[in-house]
Image (tube, rainbow, N blue to C red):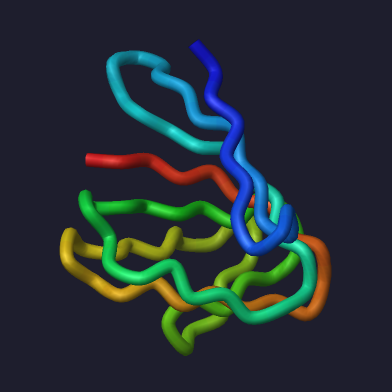
Length: 89
């Protein structure tokens, strides 16, 4: 099953799915600043396109992903349309 998620008046959208026994989301973020609150599970975010500033650090495609521990805060900003793949543990 694929689940469509929308946040911040549609400025952040993702498709949630389960593949290989792991929950994942594939998302797009428009320019702006977004506070998602506290992570319910550990999240590993890999930037696919653009640049995402996550919790004060910039992440780029083809670099190490951002790991947000369970209970960690999630603050995301970007100056260009960006996309990501998020794995949940």
